[in-house]
Amino acid sequence: MHASREKSPVATRALLLETASQIMRDGDIVDVSLAELSQRSGLNSALVKYHFGNKAGLLAALLDRDWRAIVESVDALVARDGWSPQDKLRRHISKVIDTFYAVPYLNQLTMRMVRDSDEAEARRIADSYLSPLYRAYEDLIGQGVATGAFRPVDPQLFYFTLTGAVDRFFSARLVLRHCFGQDTLTEDLRDRYREHTIDIVMAGILARDGSGESTDT
Image (cartoon, rainbow, N blue to C red; front, top):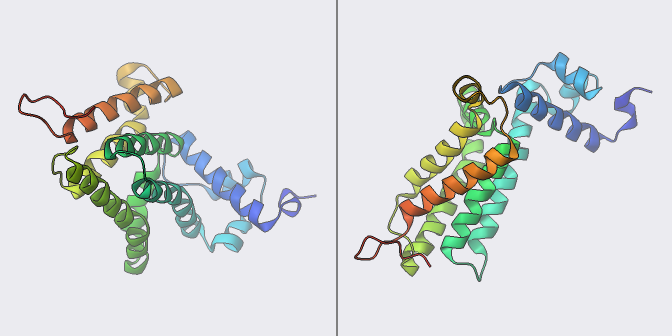
């Protein structure tokens, strides 16, 4: 029996998305070949049309899948009681780095979809994922400023600082290979970069006392 007949529609759709994600991770690319997708998933490529309409629909669904976890996570974090703004920001940076380690193509795919989509779809992507993340940074930074933990920082620029730092690192496999002789992004390297990024970002946003020392405790 063909693999596609052994799976429910929900499972088939999920397998197509995960296989597309794996192809982009392995190839360090933001595109998929339907022939390779069919070969690696064991599913007929015609199922892409059935579930997503076309390849662009597949990529849009993958973008939705990957972004949804980030937005839901940061919204819950901002609303969480009992955590200081410092702890919330550290946790968020850690989550973003873990997400980009799992799906390093995310920011590049986002930019491609915004660029290649019509105005309505580009606006949907921005309204669904980019704007909520910016608003969450407004809230989180505002909480920190209100408590005296953070100095005033432009949330828009903070968004570009953090996403740029994370995207640049996890889409730099060729740089690692040719400059540092390292062909893969290992868990150890991810963990080191997580601590490095948290240290750098927190040092930049924490309020300072008169001696120039961080007020973070």
